Length: 301
Image 1: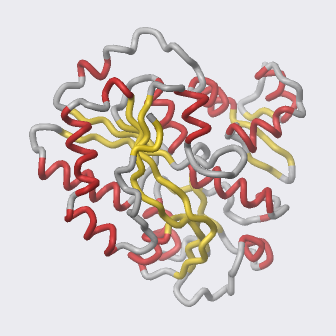
Image 2 (image 1 turned 135 degrees about the horizontal axis):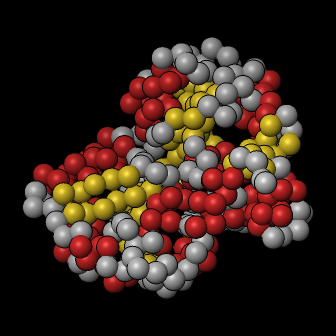
């Protein structure tokens, strides 16, 4: 019987692959795992969910969206500017109710694949570290989707005002023994952090609080503001809103991905149309860290 937490050997047996392939799946395919005392462990239920997100030709779910009349279902990553856009949509189009699940990019992609949402919100760094979302979409969805640029934004380290620990880099999180508040496994932010830690040769187990998580960018910022953590991983806009210090890590692209056969439906087109609205542009320009120069641009069709 496989335990709830699998080691590398057990995970390889569970997936039917060579043990060495596990490390490739971690860094290139987002296999959910974490290091404990320097060794990788894998929560079985998250691995099973990761497998489900890669399944093609899901049976019996094609009619779900057709039954969701009067709703606009949005799943995936969270973002303060996206929250504003949803609020704007609710005010402009009161006959349609937008419902959002802030489940993280990986689960947003899974929901899209299962055809249980209209729009998935993604910022998944490509396996080779160049660009965002395209490789994941090509593998999971092929030509079934249309991706639309939402915004460019900056991910980084949130710190208490004045940066009392003098953190200037990811390496300093270890050197200063900074208490971290992280994001959940499966989120684009967690995937980015793990990639950057690996590139810097840092062991996550050396960072206090690496396994402590919050459910959104704003929640990460609030944990730092309340001094429940010394540092958090989130976007620049949250640091600006809460008056926190910020060390940038990477600029990233945040996309809205729509099923091709839902793209021209009225609720989806009304939502995407607001990307060109003057009120949306004013809000984006008022928040720190966003670039909306390519907002609304179709990237994959």
